[in-house]
Amino acid sequence: MDSRKTSIAVEMRVRDAGLRPTRQRIALAELLFAKGDRHLSAEELHEEALSAGVPVSLATVYNALHQFTESGLLRILAVEGSKTYFDTNTSDHHHFFVEGENRVFDIESGPVTVTNLPEPPEGMEIANVDIVVRLRPKRPA
Amino acid sequence: MDSRKTSIAVEMRVRDAGLRPTRQRIALAELLFAKGDRHLSAEELHEEALSAGVPVSLATVYNALHQFTESGLLRILAVEGSKTYFDTNTSDHHHFFVEGENRVFDIESGPVTVTNLPEPPEGMEIANVDIVVRLRPKRPA
DNA sequence: CTGTGTGCAAACTCTTTGCATAAGT
DNA sequence: ACTTATGCAAAGAGTTTGCACACAG
Image (cartoon, rainbow over the protein chains, first blue to last red):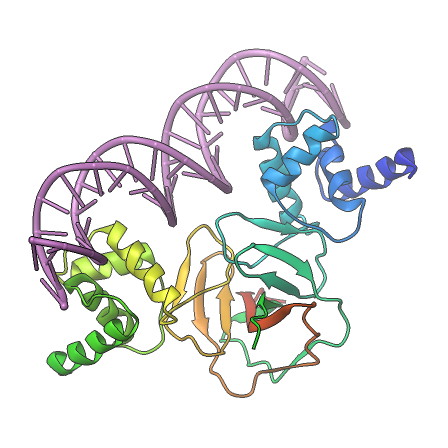
């Protein structure tokens, strides 16, 4: 991968989000957006950054994740569990959730559709629809 | 409402779940199951119990909620946010989620359906499908 | 230069745990 | 009596915050 080219694209992305393209934010954005759709927690991203030789602090990772989320670059995943997971795919798509393991992965988008969605209450509009298909190990018959 | 009759039904429910019908568990189960579908956090249930004159400790509320969940009397809601919400309706149904307020309420069940659900991966089966319709205040045009 | 971002450590919130006491069977 | 549940307080995990220093424009 050409990391110089990636950096520039990512830098623009950060700048377009109204954020100063600092070393840390660019490094984090690169980790987040370089490899397609990802679901990860602050702690996971922090470790990844350290492994990649980017000595960013956990607090900065939290800041960046929230700022990216506010700017629409990320979305927070609606899954149970103590940690917050961020999703790099902000378009409408859905997830499998593995019970017990707290593991999440995308449902290959395409066919899944919801029909007969109810009207939202007065004064509200639908921001998006999340579908979580909860999986459990198949127990032998 | 006839609280004596309610107590007996609730007591059986707790007993059938394999749990000793202690004062606290019965009182909590009554609060939970008396008024139809509810979504609440441990802290909310705790406060409700205290208001109802049942001096139960928060730790016991947590214990009871988890035990009820393991027994299939409750389900954990898949919504973002720091608190865990429990749902007294364990059948397949779906939710509105109000952004910002962390408020959840049922979608009047009936018409909503999902089509073209993907196959679960090998060795896994679908435990259930949660649909969360995220709402935001409608902003004037 | 000026203002925003970062790092650290402490604070905070929600939840779990350990152990003595109380209650259920 | 014997066993399991409860309550309290302390510990733990995840996240947020305050403030001095560093960096981007």
